[in-house]
Image (cartoon, rainbow, N blue to C red; front, side):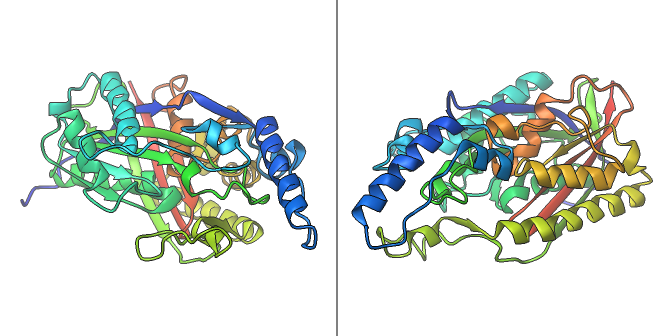
Length: 372
């Protein structure tokens, strides 16, 4: 279909699903250290594994707790990974289920019915299966006509999805698009790795991107978006259908999340800060005048430095809110959770920035202005 570029994309509403179970740092450390004791006792001739601690975790990341779909198995020193019962093909998959929950909330907040939506994009860091696409299952469960597809740009999946949805609206190919990010990141974390066992949590978010002509009176105008990718091995996950997880002791950890944290910090912070400043200049926006930054929730130190470079001063909690402390790193959903929970107090005309960054490297910016 060929259409005139007439649509003006906005964010009409967001939705959030939060698992009922949460693991505190104290609980996590007790489990990890019990594993360390067992491992060291079983391997007396090997270099002993080091304990974790609450102080170490909070200094390294700023994380204090994380929500998960399978708490008991993660905390069991004999298992230390999620155990989600396998479902039959006739049952809704777990990723689709939590994605649908977040999507329904977004639709309800916008006063929209499923039949009003034209497309569903499932944008997340890891998909439960190769096919059928998770987006199509979510589309089916919601009763949406049109189309759906999956996209994966790791921690930037949601912002890449928002730009894709906005482009559909601008092109006139859709008037209402759901960007759903179900993130069960606990499943690709090595809970036995001291350097990363505390990082991830589970959640699902949804963003309803629509043509301003049909949006509710109060919405967020999308002023501009910018995407950037630079290949790096400093954050990697090798799990896949061609390279499945090996048995214990045969490289299993390499098939899960691994990162070179210091390199990521050093390389990503200046890249993202400059990207924000450059895009703000292109849009005619004073970055120091941004009312709020909803940044990717991966590391408190990274957010602090990026916000400082963009705003020109040390950002306070009002200017750059944090959900990392209670949700942990939820990959692409992090900045959307921050936006979902911390936007209603802003006034008409206030401008802000939704920003993601992570594996790839990938980074995405969505500049928005409150309307209504």
